[in-house]
Image 1: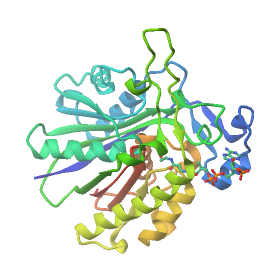
Image 2: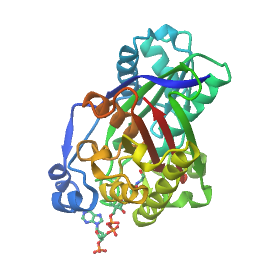
Image 3: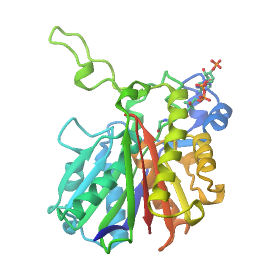
Image 4: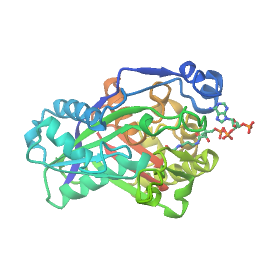
Length: 325
Ligand code: UT7
């Protein structure tokens, strides 16, 4: 017994923030952002929007696509580093919003690799008999933790959510493998220090630092290219495929130059790489499921296609998933 992706869905807030808009906030230019990242615009949620609103919209779309009712969902996993609250989990809010009353729900934290981690966990739970149907969601309001005075980070990220429905299928079909890795020694390259116990306020009245993303862009860039390349090749080798068998490569959408370098390392030509970074920026855990939903809608990911996904993010974390759609 294995698992397959039976439905996909996405949601992005309607407000568009262009590179030109960012020029008014920080010392940057449309030209620099396009050339160095490939990003043209990103979506921004209204201030105060809970991440679960976006996640629930994406989940509803995925369930409709799968033709599955909310009360048939057994497991809800939300990957996010921008949860509604410290607790309860964003997944519990999603459960309530979509009326999935028979599910158990929890969040996982693996930054931009979160969706691949969540997929791997949901697959393992179904294989272990803990349920038959899972909603796997990547959802972020990254703009809520951006420092709009830091041009190294504030130009990169955007908001959105993507979801898949995972159901049982015969072994050897559907999700063929997940590979997930972490290197906690390198946490300092990409982190959000505020909001946790390591950077809390004190009883004497010392204020906690703001929750914002801090990144060493060059270091993250180098590790992302190496690790996404490695873990993609591993997925192919373990399953006995070569680069030529891949119908579509869906990398985490962080930087066009990272995507191109990884594509080159694996040997997959540009026409078989899905890129929607220009419109959304880096939506962290939401980037792969949003890309998957758009690829499906554009007819670039059909039933029977072999789809390779690879992600990289804070932790540091990285991972791949190989799926027969
Ligand atoms: O989801 C996973 C996490 N994130 C990533 O994968 C991101 C990985 N890193 C990157 O995408 C890139 O490193 C960045 C886009 C963040 C930066 O691009 P870069 O080509 O590595 O630029 P850099 O940091 O080497 O900076 C080059 C120059 C610097 O100026 P000087 O010192 O050469 O005068 C920066 O100050 O570009 C400057 N710069 C900017 N200029 C205009 C940095 N950010 C900006 C900006 N606008 N937004």
